[in-house]
Structure formats: structure tokens, C-alpha cells
Image: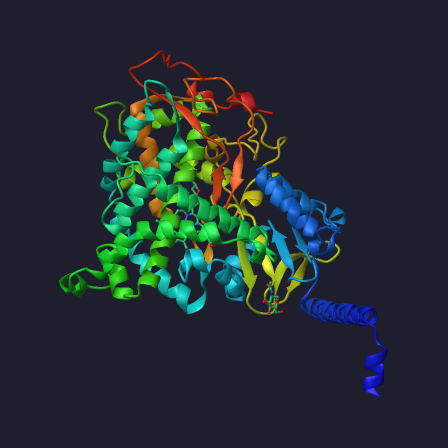
Length: 556
Ligand code: HEM
Ligand SMILES: *[C@@H]1O[C@H](CO)[C@@H](O)[C@H](O)[C@H]1NC(C)=O
Ligand SMILES: *[C@@H]1O[C@H](CO)[C@@H](O)[C@H](O)[C@H]1NC(C)=O
């Protein structure tokens, strides 16, 4: 019987049959998944796509990313999702492309709060993320959950106790290497601040955490920096190409990882060779992160992972934030003046000025406003990711009105954007309410923080919140505050330099939108050139702006 049947089937018929079976199986699976989703909660508006598996959507994302248009891309994906038009202020949408699991995109503070604190146990980095990031970050703090994560968190925590944070002297050594470099060269007064800040923060973070700095400001070597940059770039692509990222070649990625690993190796060797007398100290009060690591493990792979994570966290974040801050300062002379006025009152300006202590930095309100404003507009983790670990819901964004809980199966990917949320006009006083002073949420205006406005809870979370809040936050704020104060004590005038960094070029081609490149963290998409002029030198008339009435030109 069976033989007769087999004999009659032509290869073509067999293929048609097989395709049919796959199709049916796929359909059944989708029905089952869909039923499970509905049992858990509602659906969010669906992001539109035409091609199977949303290949067109992934392609457009890749193109948008290439063109530094990520914000516009995600914003319009949410606004144009099917069903979003009937929702007042849509902030959440989903991509349901068939083969992979659903992806939810949200900018809603209620959902972000649930992810980060209220339903912390339901969401984590998940297996998929851990697997995709394994080669770069191993089993380190950024890519793990549960016990593995918690152990890394305990390992790093002693590094950020108060008595360590207050030690601002550490930064002075490195700032003294940075300051002369900001003056530029005889050929070019404009300097690109980005690579300088990357070197500066690498030196400071390695000094602080590992007990010995890399001193890269004095010995510029680009091998490590370039390898690190490439690895992050490729890792970003691995993130964007999900679920097709297995197609990406990892050859160059691995070559660059090797360069990074060679750079880190001496630190691993140092951990392994710490004399036993060093290790009899109280393990809860390690003298450096290296000592903490030596107590933790002797496994070179784990040491490598932990060190890589710490370099990523400690270098790029503050360097980028400082770069964007300098970019804005060089375009806002009135803000520079107001900040210099605050510095002058408290610490003085010029060669005889005092260096700021921890308390000084904490009490300087305008400085804090500038740092808040920079992390509001340019949060270094603009898009973040979680996976659902169990069957659960997100509190809002589902159903026809977008106000019902969304049903979430395990393995659902959630992308949340603090950057879109922090720029959302709905969370700021509207022009008509703020009378003479309207502060456009899309612009960098530190004054908004000086007039009694405070963001509502969970609407300003550049450092995250909940159990996974950035443990380096205080360190980062002190480092950045110290750096700004010291730079402005020396340089009285900052001006925007031309994009290509050649010649003086002040004032040419400095207009136009800032390009932002979204790698795994936020980066400037081009050079950020500034001209720094000392108080005593070169034609600064000191009278521009008029510190008291800053930003009036932006009033509505
Ligand atoms: C402007 C500066 C910084 C910003 C805006 C920032 C922001 C963040 C954010 C949003 C996260 C959460 C990431 C996630 O959910 O996966 C994070 C995590 C982390 N940050 Fe920072 N960070 C900054 C500087 C630093 C510095 C200087 C260090 C250390 C020297 C540091 C160490 C860490 C670590 C270890 C984590 C992982 C925490 C965990 O997963 O439990 N950060 N940071
Ligand atoms: C999708 O979800 C299933 C479980 O439903 C899981 O086994 C699989 O790893 C997930 N796939 C991806 C690409 O996330
Ligand atoms: C900066 O933001 C933090 C966190 O929201 C807030 O507590 C602080 O008051 C803000 N500082 C200023 C000067 O607005």
C-alpha cells in the first residue's frame, strides 16, 4: 500500500506536500502562540511590515542605524503601528514576525518601571542575550541574571563605597594630562574631544578600579581603542540583525577581541600574581578591584570577562557624556558663563583656583543641572533590552485603547528607550503653561532644572533604576563634574570647531544637526571639535550672552 503511494509520488508532488506540511505546522504553532498571548493579556499595536519575517523592517532598521536615524525610526515605528491611530499618545508597539518571538518596543514610564523594578524577576537579560554576547562579555554583570549576576554585582559594589567616591584627588593627576591637550596644536586650535575623553576616562577608570592607570593620554596608542570600537560596533549589529544574526561573519570580530584580550592580559597576570599577604585582607574591603577579583576566582576566563565589562562601563559612558556636554557648551556661551560664575564664587578661576571636593561638586546646583540635562538628552544607554523570563504582562499599552496590560510569553524581547521617553514632550510643561520661559524638551537647556521643575518618578532614568541601577552613577557624576570644573577654571571660552578638524575653522560648518551613532551605547556620529581658549589669551571679550537672562532667545 505504502509502496504504491510512494511509487506514484513525483518529486514535485513530494515538495508541494512538504511545503504544505510546513505551512500548516507554522500556522498551528502561530495559533497556539497567539492563544497563549491572549490568555496572558492584550496585544499592542502591530508594527507594520510587508515581507515575510519582517525582513523589510529589519532592513530599514539597519539603514536607519547607518544613517544615525534610530530615534526617528523607532518613534515612527510606534506611531505608525497598526492600531496606534486610535490610541491617545501611543508609546508601545509590537513586532510579531512569525519565526522569532515577539518583540515589544516601549517608551512608557509605567512599563519601564515594571521592567526595572515592579516585575524585576519576570524580566532579565535572558538566555538569548547571554548567548549573543558571550564572546564579548562572557558571564559578566551586563549579560547575566540570577546568581551569576548577583555575584558580579557584589564583586563591584565595594568599589563605589562613599569613602572611595569622595577621593577626587585621583582625577587631578589625569586632568593635568588632559588640559594641555585641549589647547590644540600650532596647526589646529580645534580639537576633537571624543578620543581625548576616551583616553582620559580609560586612564581614570583603570587607575580607580585597578590601582594603576593606562596613562593613554601620555602614550597615545590606538590599537586597543580601535579594536574595542570595532567589537562594540559588530556587537550592535548582532543585536540589530536578530533573528538573522547567525549570518554575520565573526572573523574580524574575533581578531579584534583578541587584540582587546591582549590588552587586558597584563591585568589578569597581576591578579594571578598578587602575593598571598595581599589576599589576607578583609575581602569585603578590597583595596582595588584586582584584589576583589583575586578573592573571587583564579579562572583567567572569568577574570577577563569581569575586566572587559568594567572597561566598557567605565570608559565609554563618561567619555561620551562629557563629549556631548562639551559639544553643547561650545554652542551655548551663556551656559558657560553661568557655570563659570558658579565655579568662580565657590572655587575661583584661573591658576590660583581651588580644586573641587566631593561636597563642592554635590552643592553646585548649576553644575548638577548641566549634568542632568546632558544625561536627559543624551543618555548613553538610549535603547536597552530585556527578555521575559516567565509568562507575564507589561502593565500598559495593550488593547484598543492602549491602556490594558500586554500579555507576554517567556522569551519575548522587550526593547525600551529611555532616550525617547526623556525627549517626549508629553512629560514636559507645554509652551502655554511655562509662559515666558519655554524649554523645548528636544533641546539642551540646563535652565529647565533651575526653576523648580523636577521630572516625575521614572521619567528621568539615564542610570536605570531598581536592582540593576548603575552602580557607577556616583563615580560617574563626580568624575564628570570634576572634569568640567577643572576645564572651565582654565579655559574661559569654548567655541565650536568645524566638523573635519582641519585648521582653525571656527564658525564654519558648525551648524546643522548633531549626528548620533547608536552602537551598543550612544556615540557621536562625527568628530566633535571644540576650540578652547584660556582666560588670558586670544580675543575673548567676556561679554557675550549675559548670564542672568540665558536662553531668552529660545522663549516661545
Ligand atoms: C554617564 C555615565 C553613565 C551612565 C549614563 C550609565 C548608565 C547605566 C545604565 C543605564 C545601566 C543599565 C544597563 C542595563 O540595564 O543593562 C548601567 C549599568 C552599569 N553601569 Fe553604568 N553608567 C554610567 C557610568 C558608569 C561607570 C563610570 C561605571 C563604572 C566605573 C558604571 C558601571 C556600571 C555597571 C557595572 C553596570 C551593570 C549593572 C548591572 O547590570 O547590575 N557605569 N549603567
Ligand atoms: C522563542 O521562544 C522559544 C520558546 O517559546 C524559545 O525556545 C526560543 O529560543 C525563542 N527564540 C528566539 C530566537 O528568541
Ligand atoms: C538632577 O536630577 C536628580 C535626579 O532626578 C535630582 O534629584 C536633582 O535634584 C537634579 N538636580 C538639579 C540641579 O536639578
